[in-house]
Length: 628
Ligand SMILES: Cc1ncc(C[n+]2csc(CCOP(=O)(O)OP(=O)(O)O)c2C)c(N)n1
Ligand SMILES: CC(=O)[C@@H](O)[C@H](O)COP(=O)(O)O
Ligand SMILES: [Mg+2]
Image (cartoon, rainbow, N blue to C red; front, side, top):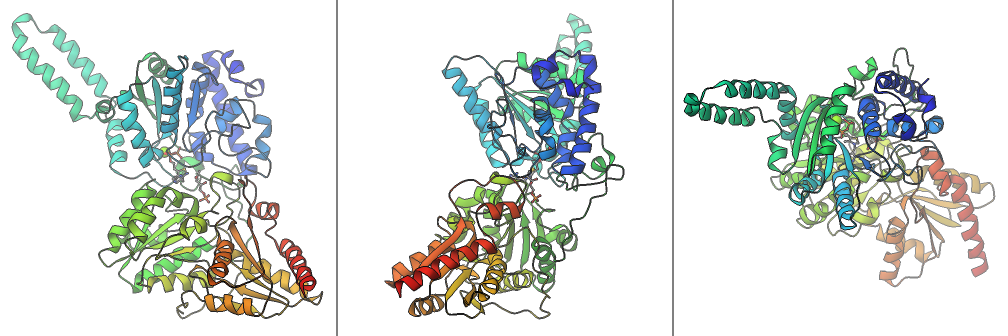
């Protein structure tokens, strides 16, 4: 096995080029087998085997800097840089990260997870290299999906004028997670299909060379035809006009061709874009035939590709969202769904089939998606922006400047709120309460179960007094039966679920269940704990909060979100503003980045469990007795 001999790019370089196809096959088999046990981003990595081999064979990582956009396709890079033995721990607690991680290897020169950052990072590295008169290559590998991200276009705009030596490898497999979308995608399609342009051009040049002097006037005309042909078949003209040398398109699975064009790129001065055409899922039929569902996989059977279903009794919140959206759109023509490239993850595929004219996948473009929703809202429609909490961070100014300030009726369906598990620190959905709560006009709510999610979506669809955010987890609900009728939830009203006079737990969203468990357990110790489904982080239930203070009840707030600026902070601020003394303790995510693992492991790590709540309640009730 060649792969077992390789622990660094230096050992790769000892192989002959003729060995590489065999090594590529071994790598593909390794990925298919290993990820059948661990899950992970399978299709994207199968598509970049030859590309990654060629890069590490030709260039000198880590002296030469190789950056991986999004970074979900860096498993081959990790295999070639000494981490093969760690793959059984991929994306597991304290195991191998699913994205580039500087602490893992000197070859991971740039950490990613969110899309479209590689070109800006690469440009920074190129400028710093030149300012320090250093001499190494900077190479950014970016997918066709990631290229639709605004940041990438901002970077290209800068790269093109600074003319720094920089290699952009565009890994074009025509796919984002779903099929890629947009005008840029269509343009790349024309480039891909006009590969023979260079052949026509060469043939015309050969013909021109044969034209005798007498034919000069004709020759000039033909020259102009040849040059205009370039615009006809758009051979990289967009990138060339932006100031980059365009090379390609090249077959990203043909190692010889790939090596040749990458050598050429390495020898080209100034910024170069190499257009590499690959197939997402290459070499594994189930993934080739369905790269959408094999983009991110759980465990599966290798022979059939069949996924092993996770046993979960209750439906997952995103599925409830997708189903409810169809119900609402059937009865309300104003409803419009928007997703920034997460149609599948947000469970909007069925909605898109039912209402194609009212469903927009705008690509990896969260800023545009947010302001696009604002534009729709100005015309009396009801846009629902389905967006992961972590990716909403990309559209923050647009939330402020375009939606909240103009007080527009946009519904933010904030999916993956709370811990997300295996994607880890770059994807945790734990900051949205903190970064949204300071916005005037915005309502923020979170359901305690899947039935309440459905009712919150209905409530939001009927709410015409400004923007409203509903945040919900990626996980399963509680299995509760769904109400048949629609029930509007009174804005700003919490819900007492369990009475008690020894302490009160103000639980937010997913923390309601563990709070109820803790209260039931504490009852055995004679402690009578009131449990309240807080429901709203904004506006707060002022009447309820004032009542708790009046009763001098110790209060514990619990949220699966950043403690700093979260729901608990809002409660503290409320009492301070009211000049009311209250005994408030808070539970939430402390001030550090929580790495990959399962959601349960992440919750346990920060104490957001029923046991953790029990400990806290014991503590605050003891203090209460001491005060008495
Ligand atoms: C800002 C941001 N939005 C959305 C995502 C979710 N996401 C991860 S990979 C991906 C598609 C990337 O497509 P491409 O760059 O073409 O890579 P491929 O998987 O095709 O290799 C998306 C939308 C993300 N990681 N970051
Ligand atoms: C790499 C990336 O950002 C996406 O693939 C993300 O991992 C999707 O997350 P879900 O699997 O929760 O939809
Ligand atoms: Mg792609």
